[in-house]
Image (cartoon, rainbow, N blue to C red; front, top):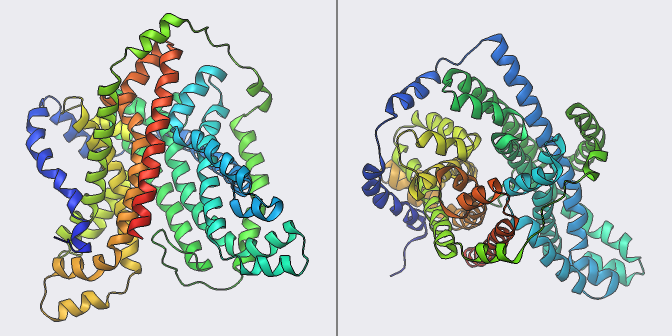
Length: 511
């Protein structure tokens, strides 16, 4: 039996049924008063000048790390994207083999989460500001390279062939024919990566790499909820301002949103984009100086201990089946909660338009609140394990997917929904079969991509909630067991590369 597309988006929400059965058994009931105090503190954040000053300094570090790592990853990704493009190599040398080899090499750094890069670089380079920047630049640069090379290879090449036939040189023909149509896609994706860089910089701060994330962790551990909410409201203000700026620029320049629907724009697009890109270099230099980054310090590496054969045997004896199985189960549960939860919540509040701002606020908090801190908060009332980790990871990604679904619904024509309303259909059914019908396949396609991201993020909550490969990674790092760490990285890379391939296949099938 074939299921209608709008109903398909609700299928993942079926995971809520077993969750409702399992949660009562996980609840230990010892921290509900703390949860109540946490919620109450949201309305009474601390305005102590000393606290606010400390939070503002931490926020400045987080935003600086995000902007610097984003700028560097864009530049690195652009260069590597061109170098891994089949079209570029075919045009310049007649063979695409080097592009294929480089694509496979770049799959390794992007398969490892920025948190793992940060923890590894911390062991090798010591605690310095550049560690957080490099931890984001390495995987982000490889991700940007993949997107740019895919976009470039997917562009029509008739103009390029015409220029080459007319005798133009290969580099000049590529720049003239492919540069202008590639630029809007690069800028649109670059805006999305800036949002991600802000979240990653906050997350790395939670694990000791400085910035506002570290402040949030300390206030949560000391149960200073009023100070915690002061930091959260500051971070929320920055995040929403950034999102509004990116949305305004997309509309002004006529760039597509992440559901592939073009938005209206005006002229002067190219000049304004190039002007902003030209400001990146002085901005990077200023931020680097303010953060105290010293490039020479990156040349001094701390030596790693030697590896012995008996250590490898101990590493191979780890319960790999259970660790990998828990990681995959955590991925599936979190993805189902996020992908199915967003449309379900929108349908539930459909008759009450005034509830939508509250839902937007909830999703905004989910996007900015780092998953490990959510896991710590949940541990006040739930036992550690897969379901607790899935709730923390699912809530974070629910905020991301919910925002995207709202953007897509608002950019779609409401004619079908209005027609159903005119026939006396209820608000929920009209929304489901009106707007969701047009969005279902593209939303599920993005959900498939997000599932691949969630697989990478399992390490984040695994470190806190005690499940999957993440908890073993924490133990191995604490004991400096580099043989175990090496095998864990191989396992993570293999899983994420397989997940990436499966998500790509799912997106191609859906779209």
